[in-house]
Every structure is written in structure tokens, then in C-alpha cells.
Amino acid sequence: MSSPPREVSTVELERRAFRKRQGAASIVISVVSTLVLAVLAWLFVINTPGWARVQQQFFNPEVALASLPRVWDGFLLNLRVLAMSAVLVLLFGLLLATLRTLRGPVWLPLRALAAAYTDVFRGIPLIIVLYLVGFGIPGLQMIPVRLPVEFWGTLALTLTYSAYVSEVFRAGIEAVHPSQRHAARSLGLSHGQTMRLVVVPQAFRKVTPALMNDFVAMQKDVGLISLLGAVDAVKAAQIETAAYFNFTPYVVAALLFVLLAIPTIRLTDWYTARVRAREQVGGIV
Image (cartoon, rainbow, N blue to C red; front, side):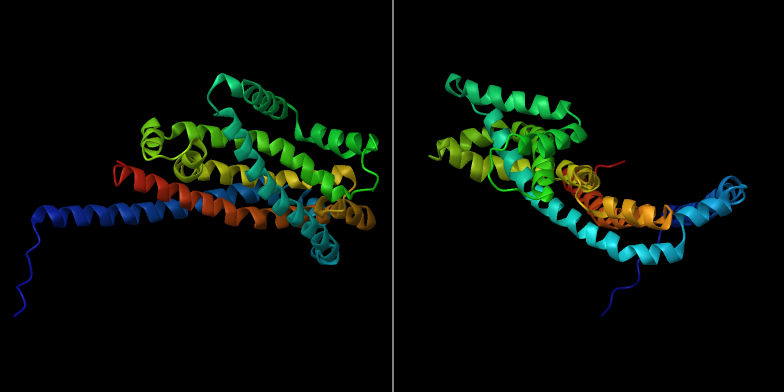
């Protein structure tokens, strides 16, 4: 036998009615704000005297389609440099963070070197690092063979972003409670095993949102390798712009970078919200 339906209290009915009114009000406000934004865009962008000229020079569909193949080929170079740099940055950044967290006077030289490295490469702009690495190191003629520009761009990105990522990792390692280390050592684990099996996995989970934000930033900065002469998406857009005397290829390159960044940004937002919800367990007011 099914149980009789439970009667809904007056207070619950009032709450449901209030939530319904709030939902309807939110929809109305969203529609109105969108219309206001559209009107402002029409007044201050589309309705301006120079909009037709800007549209022809920056948003020309024919030029976009004609320049897309060459810009896409250059964008594939950006993707290769990004993939290699991301792996190297994670490995080298973790190594630097581990050196910074070593205890004992015997490790002082390594800690000092790691600290100096992070200070220097966090202070030098990436553009200068690209010039120093891409033109300075080959000028020393230490390597008998001529390495491609793609290699030097990857090296410059790795050197710069490893300094930032190492500090992110170090903050995550230091955020792990000391009792975790003490418990691991009491079980007979060595310092290396404690770091590898206990501390680093917890630290990695804590700093994943920050690491993903650094990855988004690196997705944009990978376009700077064009300064070394690499025909990436930016350089290809520059070549096509000179060929068509039109700036639309730059917009095409920008759209490719945006399409690359949006999934990572959304994934970062989702993971951050997931971590916050798990830690606070519904405690958000």
C-alpha cells in the first residue's frame, strides 16, 4: 500500500513562491541587461563613422578564409611548442620546488641556487629571455649543429614558466600539514618516499587550479616565439597581413588562440568549483 501524500506546509509554499518570483525577476533582469549592452554596442561601436572601415580592415571574411591555411599551419607550431613546454615546465618546476623545501644545512647551496633562479626568471620579462636564449646561446657556438627556432622558443618558455610553477608547487608542498610527513616517516618511509607518495600528491591537488591558470597564460605567451623568426600563427598572420594589406589575419590568429584557451579556462573554473564544494561541503552562504 502506498503511503498518503505528505501535506506541504504553508511556510514551504511561501518559500517556493518566493523562489519562483526570484527566478522570474532574474530572467527579466538578464534580458534587460543584455538589451542595454546591445544598444550600447550599437551606439558606440557599430554606429560610429569609422565602423565600416574597421570592419573591412579587421573582419573581412574573404581575407580570413584566404589566410586561414597559413595561419593554421603556424598555429600547429604553437601547439607543438606548448605541449613540449608544458611537460618540461611541470617537471623542472617540481624539481625546483623540491630543492627549495629541502631541510638541513648540507642542502643550503641547492636551496640558494633554486631561490636565485626563481628570483631571476620571475623578474626578467619573457621577451628578454627569448632574445637572450634565442640569439645569445646560439652565438656562443657551443653546439656544432644548428638547432631550430622551435627548440630555443621551448627552452625560453620552460626557463621562465618553471620559476612561476616552482613557487606554486612550493606553496602546495608547504600547505600539506606536517603531521602527514611525521606519519609517513613513522611508518618507515624515507624522505624521498614521503615526498613522492604522500606530500606531492596532496600538494598537486591543492595547486591544480593555479597550475591550470599558468597553463592558460602560457598558451598566450607561446605566440611570442615569432620574435625569434619562427613562422607560427602570429608570424604567419603578419605575413598574410602584408600580402593582403589587411589586418584580418591577426583576428584569425587571435580566434585560434581563444578557441584553444576557452576549454582550459572552463575546465579550470569547473575544477576550482569542484574543489571548493568538496572542501566547504555546502558551507557557502
